[in-house]
Image 1 (tube, rainbow, N blue to C red):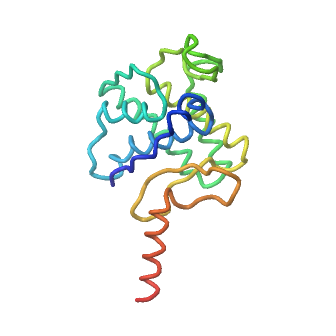
Image 2 (image 1 turned 90 degrees about the horizontal axis):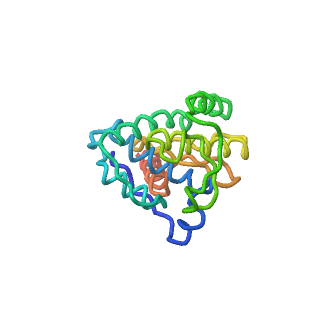
Image 3 (image 1 turned 120 degrees about the vertical axis):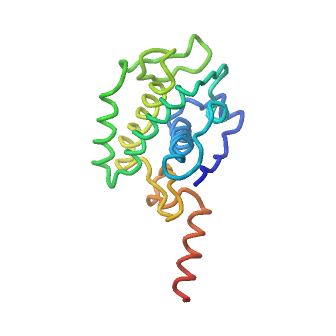
Length: 197
């Protein structure tokens, strides 16, 4: 299954909120889906250029010079993060996050990247940390805050039998089951056809 391209944030959203918990969580979901789609299907691995384009769409600044090795490291982080999304309940999500947080490379710190961005927290070793380390640390931090704030898993895996995408639970309503309206509609139509048959 090919990952679906997410709707990137607008230019205004990118410049003012790219380091918010919500923005980092959306970037995490997009990267996990893009980097793990090849694991679940016959899709080829995304190229460094594809992942760089996705990072730009979620507000990361140039230069983004990714190598095949960087994409491999990002994919390894994405596979680890998938465990948080597959958690059945908040306790399992917290346990998965605690395992990943123990892998952290640096203490919690604030950075503005020498004044090029708003102040925001980092858990990676430094501002020039490898891409995989940066992704795992920033994603864990955002997902940890969601668990803390909402006291439930931060997201899940699409319930559609034809989709493996992860998604985030945004808002305080009931937990989602599908990654998109398209998947939810496809499953409702399939259930309707089975019922009529």
